[in-house]
Length: 162
Image (tube, rainbow, N blue to C red):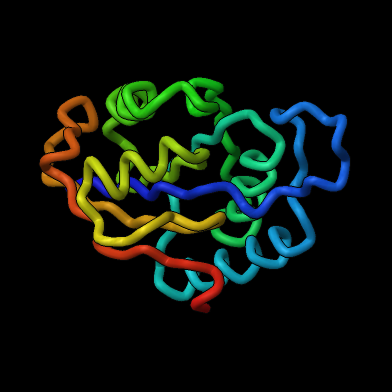
């Protein structure tokens, strides 16, 4: 059994209109949500073996904030294929994961996360909100064999519901 946790980045700030999309920071509300969601994940025992994040500032800030609470000695791996490269790139990142990893966290963006969680995995919801956390388990012997049809969303954590 493999666990992949799809995480949409925290709420970003639009206060600086001239900043490139890649460099948009996390908003105040997003910072608060990171701590709240990280504490909820810790309470549920949802601890990563590996965290891979888009290099966009808002995603990387989210990933590092979660790791600081959940597994402080863990480094965040940056993979820019997770920055709007599409769900096939996300699936490629999953399949390239070492089999020593039991729980993989991926910090991504929309529309990719909605396409994966709602469309491909069939979770019944309208949207994965900012800092939404979809815990997915798949019956596969290795990450190389991971396929959406073998996976099931067990839960979608939403910050506003905490």
